[in-house]
Length: 99
Image (cartoon, rainbow, N blue to C red; front, side, top):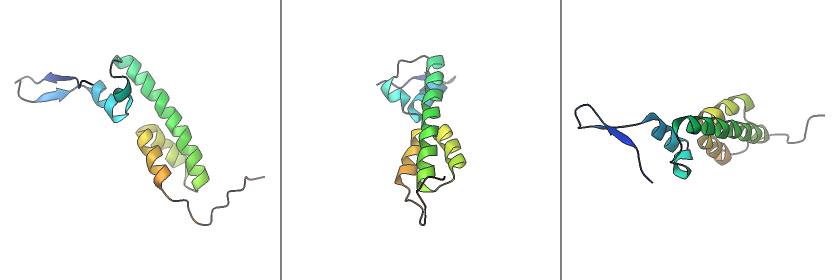
């Protein structure tokens, strides 16, 4: 696993490329670090869309605001899913489907 960086103008402080930072923040870079920037962005958008759907389902079942958690799932991806799984179910929640 390599971390891509470039030397700054003075050669003192290395800077991280945006695509490498995006890849590691979304965990896609850990599994596919060889992706070019365009493919990485498309993959991240697809994965975060699926994470948003999972957050919506989990939030609805646990009694949390589904629109808020859908947005959080799209922005933060797997990190939002992990937080939502750890959160306790709200008390007094009726889990029966609405008729």
